[in-house]
Image (tube, rainbow, N blue to C red; front, top):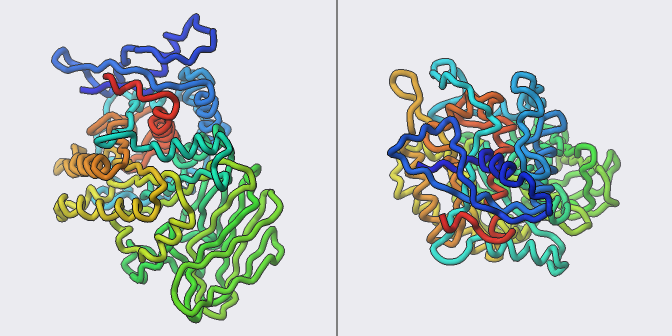
Length: 519
């Protein structure tokens, strides 16, 4: 049995650091504090792990990223010295989570096979409500057979820091399903990296909501009506594969459609680029910046292909709006927002209900051109929960198709590191209405780890981070809750905890090597 308590390690770090105020960042071996959800018997083996290396720069970035991802009113998990601070307010006095959860997390549909409604009422949760702030285990990146899987990404960060990066940007693309779409853990990643290496801008966002509830944490996206959304999971959509970088396009033929992206206070950009489908009989759209007409963009072309419209304005908090003219179909793939300054840009590319292998339904010519145009230095694939319901499909078929997806990324983004993120704990409903382990999740985790190792990617085990099989019950029943009662999605606080552990694992090698290698 593995017990690498994430907050427990932080607590042990604080205790071990007492009296050591010389500013050193030396990591030291510490006994792991077992978490409440893991009963340890005399016959079980308890590992002793080292804390991840966290220097001053990393600790400072963690605090900034926590504040940005949690919101101003929520207590942090840890302070500038890496010490846990769940005692800032008693559990019963924690403020309600920001309205993001009502507007966005509640809109995320439960994965097929469990659903989002009514299940929680029939499940007997653990009688003891543990502190949600103490949940989460430190989980390192599982390396490939030879070498370090994130070398290219770490090299790009070093080049950026040293002023050697050709365009002054390091870009991260995070593909995934609803966990990713919520933009909470991706925003933690975004906030952390730009705090350490510079704010390169927000990154990718759609120009109008492709579905109800679509938002990013630091930009609002409006204009849902009058657009048609197409992606590989829609049964009533077009299956031509012209979905672009995200894998989901929006289109309109009439003037009633409009889309608007409004940044939150302090979110600035100066370089924008709209991605669209260039096509015969393609229509035009008007582009507005802060309410003023900026340009008229035609999507007409002799042949179908990728189209781009880049424009620059003085850096500021700009509202961008698009309005089709009604002279033909306008089919849009999204927009990128960047700054003139050097830094890191993180693209959140999540589609609820999707699977990694849905990418095989995307037209490779269009998507690959978009990906090459974006030139990411790290591509993450965070999938597996929805695949866990595909019990009628042989796991061998899943593995074969996943290899094709990873190969497509490797061919079209050869400069990028690759990281697969496994599914979280996803319990199954038993005949008596209780929840039990879902064997398919274990198969998917093993498959992803094998594919990652053999194809040169890293692998991060989300379920192991949560605590293993049936850990979801503790995440749902914790105080404060760290997961929602659909037993699929995390709360905002839970996703921030996920982001913290993920970034610590990603940056561990960069900040001095993997201290867990010698366990």
